[in-house]
Image (cartoon, rainbow, N blue to C red; front, side, top):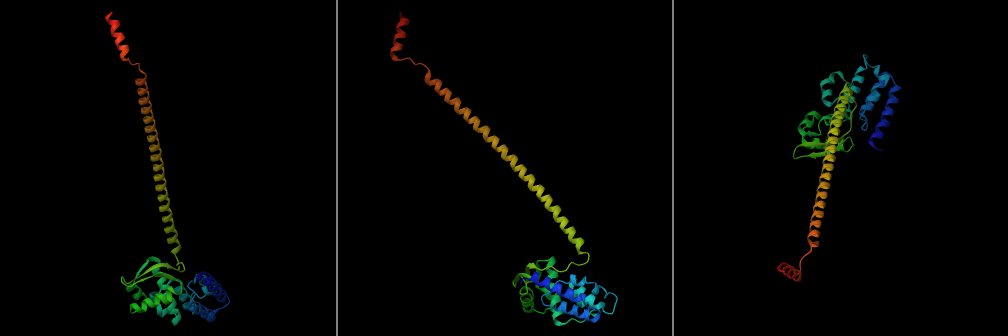
Length: 247
């Protein structure tokens, strides 16, 4: 089973669970979802009406925790730990995995120093083990560890839930890309048109040149034929002409 299908099944499972629970029991569903080793998307769960009802209640910390896993990072948790439930080890691991995905969104070459700081990892060996065993092995990222340059080169990273306000930015990015593509297409079409024009001019030039060559050949052939057909006097004819002049 591929990771996308597994994600879809887990999301459906936890959405149903959340839709049938209230209060502390719903908080437990959120903890279970954010602890699951194969679940990395939470926006559908976050959209469940029962969870939205946590806003402004004593259980709002669970809503904030779910938002953290949907959009935040390990650093965000550390900065707001006093307002959030204490994370269990599986949640800590999950949030650090999600942090790698967030970093990979904007940079495909991740320096080891930055990763160690963001993930609270103290040495390169621990960092590389984490990237291999907890990120690449699980299928959420693919890439190459470059020990010489001390960086992780990202080739693929799973996408995270869309953050509030991110849709507008994404639409603008796609719009800019479309404009650039249109301009590139126009430029290519102009170059193709220019190349076709030059090709036609070259064909015409060759045709004109071939016609001139043929005319020159015909002219030379005609002159040669005219020269060969002129009457010539034999020795006897020359002698008789001379006698006639003398007489």
